[in-house]
Structure formats: C-alpha cells, structure tokens
Amino acid sequence: MTLGLGLDSDSADGGEELPGGPSRELPPGWAWATLKELCDVNPRAFDDDPGDDDFISQVPMASVEAETGRIDASNHVRYGDLKKKSLTRFQENDVLFAKITPCMENGKITVARGLLDGRALGSTEFHVLRSCGAVLPEYLMHYLLQRDVRVKAEQNMSGAVGQRRVPRPYLESLEIPVPPLPEQRRIVGEIEQQISRIEAGETAIASAIERQLPLRESLLDHYVLGLAQERDADSLKSLNERQGKKIDYRSIIPLPRGWSWRIAQDACTLITSGSTPQSSLMYADSGEIPFLKVYNISKRGFVDFSIRPTFVDKETHEGSLKRSRVTPGDVLTNIVGPPLGKSAVVPNEYPAWNINQAIVAFRAGPDISPAWLRYVLQAPYVIGLLTETARATAGQFNIALSTCRELPIPVPPRDVQEDLCGALAKSLAEFDSQHASVEALVRQSAGLRAALLHAAFTGALVPQNPADEPASALLDRIRAARLTAKAAPRKRAPRKPRPAPPGQGELPE
Image (cartoon, rainbow, N blue to C red; front, side, top):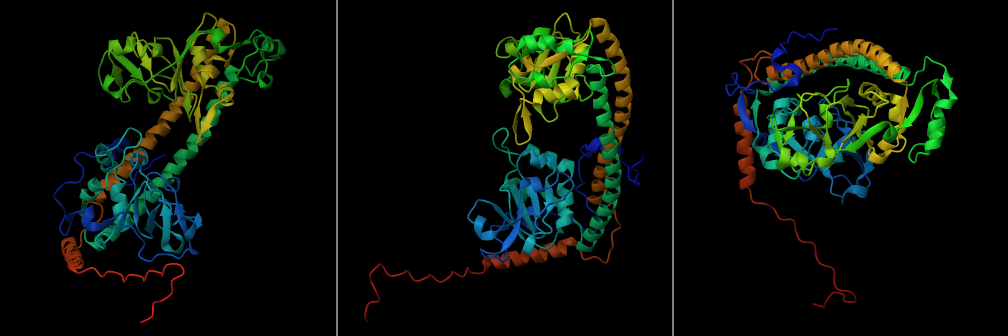
C-alpha cells in the first residue's frame, strides 16, 4: 500500500515539527499579520441574535473531530432554553480553536459549517476566530492544524495541571503568513484535494488494523485458556474453595486437565500499584531511577523507555515512592483505560524501577512464569474479568488494586507454560510484523499531511499569480476601516422609562 502524492514526507516523518516552521521570507504578494489583525477574537454576540423560540445548533467539544476539521452540528436546541447559560456563541464560517489541554494538542480545530440557521452555542473551551475578510476560514483552520503551531501553543499554555489553556493574548499575537485571497482559494482547494487522497489511504490502514486486532486477541485467548484441549470441570475447584470477593466465579469457564484457576494474590508473591511524586521530584531524560508511565508500556507487550523517559532520585525512590518500587521480572499492566491490557515484563536495563498510579505490578510466584503471566494479563477473557467490577466514568475504566488481587489466573503446569509461551511468541511475532508495516504507513500518512501543509504555507503548493491583489493592500483597507470604526462616537441606546412604583399612577401636570 502506498500513500505517495508527489510530496516529500521525509522531513516530516510521523508528523514531527518541520525545521523552523514557515520562513520569515514570503512569496510575492504575501504578508505577515497577527490573528488580532485578521479576526475578531472571541466575539461576544451573533451578528443577528435569534429569538427565544428559534432553534440553533449546539456543538460540545466532542462534536469536533481531532485533526480532521470535521464538525457535527446536527444537535439542535431552542435558543431561549440555553441563552442564559455560560456557552460560547459562534456562527457560520467562524473558526473554532479548542483552548484546553488535551483537546488543543489533539487538534480539535474546525470551521463552523452546517449550523442550523447559521448560529450555534458551544463549549466554553473554544476560542472563536471570526475573519475580518483578509483570510479564508478554511485557510486559517489548516494553518492552525499544523503540528508545529500546536506545539508552540502548548508551550504558551497557562493554568494548573490538567486545566491548562491557550491564553487569548497569545492567540491574538500569533502571526500568520497571508497570501492574496485568490491564492488562498487555490491553496485551500489543493489542500483539500490532496487530503482526500491521504484519507482514502488512512481508511484502508484503519481497515487493516481493524482486521488484525480481533485475530490477535483470539490467538491470546486460544493459548491462555487452552481452548484446543478438552475442558475439565475440576479446574474450577480451587476457585470455589477460595470464595473470592470481587469476581463472580460462576461465569468462569473450565480449563484443560492439569490446569487450575488461581487467585492472583495466591499465585503471586507481590501485587502493588504505583504512585506519582511531585513534579519537582521528577527529571526528564536522565537520572538515577527510571519512572514508568502507561505510555512506556507498548501495546505489543514490552517496556519502551525511549518514549519521554522520566527519572526520580534515589531518596525519592526509597522514600515517598517506596510502595511503587518494582524490579526486573515483575509484570506490569495498566489499570486505567481504555485501552486495558497493556502488559510488559520489567527489563533488566536498570536494577530498580518505579511505576505511576495507573500501573499495577505482579511478581510471579514459583508456579507461574513472568512470560506466561504477561500473556494472561493481555488475554481479552481475563481483561473482561477485570472490567466486570471496574469503575467506569465517561468511558474510562479505573481498576481497583483489590480487584487485581482477586483476579483469577489460569495456571497450567510449568512445562506447558514454557511450550505455550514459545508457540505464542512465534505466532504473535508474525502479527506484530504485519502491524509494524501498518504503523509505518500511519507514520507516512502523518508525514504527508505535515509536508502538504508546510508546502501550502511557504508558497510551494500552488503557483503565484502576479495579477492577484497583494495581501498587504487588503490588510491596509481593513486596518483603516477598523480605525474609522474605532474613532466613530458610540451611539448609546435610549433609556427605557422606569415603571411607576406600585399603586402610583401618572402625576397630574
């Protein structure tokens, strides 16, 4: 499968920031302008207010798709029911820019289109950009969707952790390369034509991933539960005697002869969850003790400490993080998701490690190998046992440590574990090799998008036309019109006469 569109994606592999971003030197007819010069930022009202009985669109944050610019404006509300609520007002052709983390970093940026009666109420976490005429909304949206633009916006966020936002002054000061309007139309047309081709490739990639995952999951269950062998009802005996508190053991299937279900805390010598120190006690890139987070556990079952490595010092490791210490050979799994089932064995790269609060560590006992335990914790059937008692909030699972300790573990004889782990490793390697090829196409797709947008905003995507009116001329007229409007005296609305106090009519002349 190829996504080639005649663009060089090497400089933007995986959607990484292009070196230096757009050059300060612009093509003929282009000009730099700030967003404050180009747009009304966060206008307070509609150009034409709806009546209380009018229906308009409602657009929560979830209705804006990440990185695609798509918006779902199909939800309609009566304006009078919500007009007094703290919601953001915007109208057709306004550009919406999610200001809060992680929505901004994820690229929730769009042009408001398809609004009922051209107006909408939306999330208060949107900045609204209403063009003054020198920039097309689609051009502005694609510019803001660039990864390097979002990275710089992230660096300028303010606020507390988890509630950081892009401040309005930063957005207003952001400079945009502005081509002549006719060239903007040509750029937008070419971007959308090329993106439609990229998306066709991405759809094929998503289809390949969708076909692969169920096969991989079935393979894990097949080996972990011994599905190719005859069932033995006696394998449930130990569970019935154990009387676990968290899992309904009546729903658990029998295992093959010689296998047994064991409660995790009986099969393991240690089960512990992690914790997270203050940010001032954590170090990036280098330090004494590595600190693992969920993103360091690969979906393919190994620790990937090359992803944003974080460290703590020895004093913190032995002090406030004492309960979250793990050692090589311990098996880790995430207890916050989705997705659940990311499991890995702690490597021997360092003699000691720490884990954060979203990870649980299992230390295998004498009857179970770390390799077997890792596959068990990835098996969909076992993950299902965990999620049966999980607390779910807004689609996110939070597994309790007590549930992990009561988790039933299928335990075959040690020699059978070794044979099955070897066979399973070989079979999964074939799947993972295919998946790696698909992931390479995903990176290529992201690189093509980045290369496409870089070409667009440096004047390399479409040819310039000397007959086009320079952007500077249109910007000068808009600036002059704004100055004139600012200098004009404001007309104050006439005061409404106050009603007479109760019981008092008009006084005689």
